[in-house]
Length: 88
Image (cartoon, rainbow, N blue to C red; front, side, top):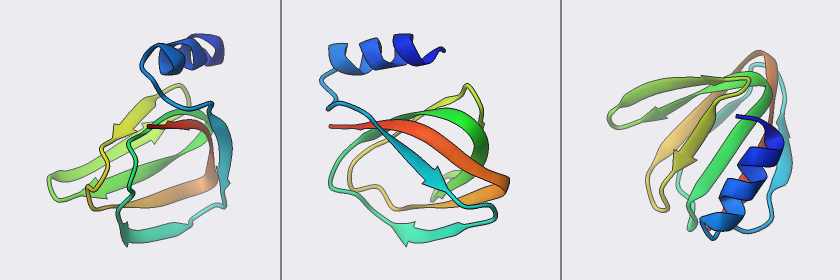
């Protein structure tokens, strides 16, 4: 998906205006939750999201969504990660 299409889809689905997030290479964001649902588009690099039901890798061009209140952790790869994320 391209950035313009992703932004349009976020708006149609009731997400707030997205922001760009940058994570350093080989960073670990330990187990946590959010009080919002997040949907993101990976712009460069990537990360692995771990949840109780396993791990999933996300790389450039992938879209991810994570429901509010769900415990998870993220680990970036050697290139770090830059992504566009909307919250609802």
